[in-house]
Length: 492
Ligand SMILES: Cc1cc2nc3c(=O)[nH]c(=O)nc-3n(C[C@H](O)[C@H](O)[C@H](O)COP(=O)(O)OP(=O)(O)OC[C@H]3O[C@@H](n4cnc5c(N)ncnc54)[C@H](O)[C@@H]3O)c2cc1C
Ligand code: FES
Ligand code: FES
Image 1 (cartoon, helix red, strand yellow):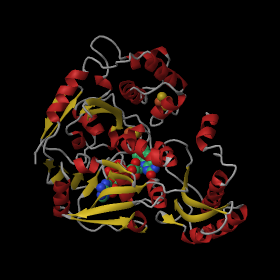
Image 2 (cartoon, rainbow, N blue to C red):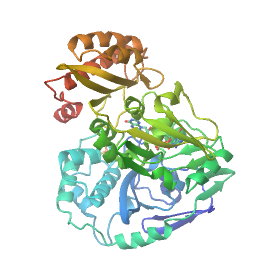
Image 3 (cartoon, rainbow, N blue to C red):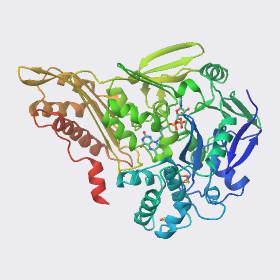
């Protein structure tokens, strides 16, 4: 393995041999490079003040993505380019997104503005559209507490409308050439004070490293692990980075479903999962902001084992399985069996999650999932309910043939409502059945009260989500109840 990392910072190649494995990109920029335009607000990926843009090669072109530098580790930049607010401006003039911010009075406070500009810059380079939804989505990971978003959204719209069809910029070809030189290299292992950052390039290498360092902290997108360091002050001595492992980034689709490597990001998984389960696609769109979804992975969400993670309940409901690997051996288990109790998962020493299989919906099935959180965008669930229902027509009556119901936020682990499912199976999909099912659902969980929601709220919300699923899927009048997205739009 290489004993150094290399990346490009605002056009300048960088090569580092001794790297603290948990030094954040933000600290490196501000404290080592004097690039203080990138700000620290929350240090937990929430506010977007620290946004910078990562560029890498994807399908032969340069891809630009906004990330939160406060929770990205410096060594994760290996093989990529980083563009900060200092690198956006051209030789003689402001970048079009900067000019649009000036012309639309979008520069509100010095703290958030660099982060907003970087999100706009990523959106400009990525070719993000000008619809309200596109722009809201682009800005959801940048918080303003002083004024509001109208001038910034106007700046985004103005800049994107004026963007030439071919928005390749002068530095694109140069960047592509620089990135090509950094592509397809062996893994890296850098050290500092006997602390290690290891980034394997293949699954075999990863399996070997995880067996050799069974206590290592695995890190994929670092949208959870970053906070172990910045918020919990944990010292991590060995960090094993999964994002460069080729096999873990693979997506394989066939008639049975889709297999996602554990390193596949939300951004990459969303369009594929959305085709199978539109509701899961919409749920993914509400995980963090774009900065979080650009690097955060479904594998990390599953492995983290949080009872309020959004992917576990929905993937449990659709019958997903995961494949774990230790050395050359793999084993596949139902995702629901991975969660043993709060804080404990079925992952053995030296093992890692290799892939997740999401089965395609079967005939006669309908899937719904609903996330309840205090804020619509970029907030963790208080309750997340998922319903995978299969119906049969028995003499003109819609009967439940199979029900898989799972909730997050209702117990110490994401969990199925087994008794409620058994009650529903074989019964007509009617108001009477639902009234009975709601009573049984209430006995399936013993939720806790915390600052996100009271136990009583959670119980009532879970019951109402089951009723909502019934209303939306009962024949003949099928419709979508006004979703929280519409309500959120209305409230702004
Ligand atoms: C601002 C913000 C908003 C967020 N919003 C949401 C939200 O709305 N809903 C939600 O559910 N989550 C949310 N999260 C949490 C986080 O983004 C997700 O849990 C994400 O999926 C974690 O993925 P990651 O790749 O970043 O994982 P990492 O942080 O890299 O790792 C997470 C955990 O998984 C382990 N791990 C990672 N990959 C593997 C593997 N292959 N095998 C074994 N162990 C592994 C790591 O050791 C670690 O314990 C948010 C986070 C932030 C910062
Ligand atoms: S400082 Fe708030 S997201 Fe990084
Ligand atoms: S722009 Fe900084 S708080 Fe509003």
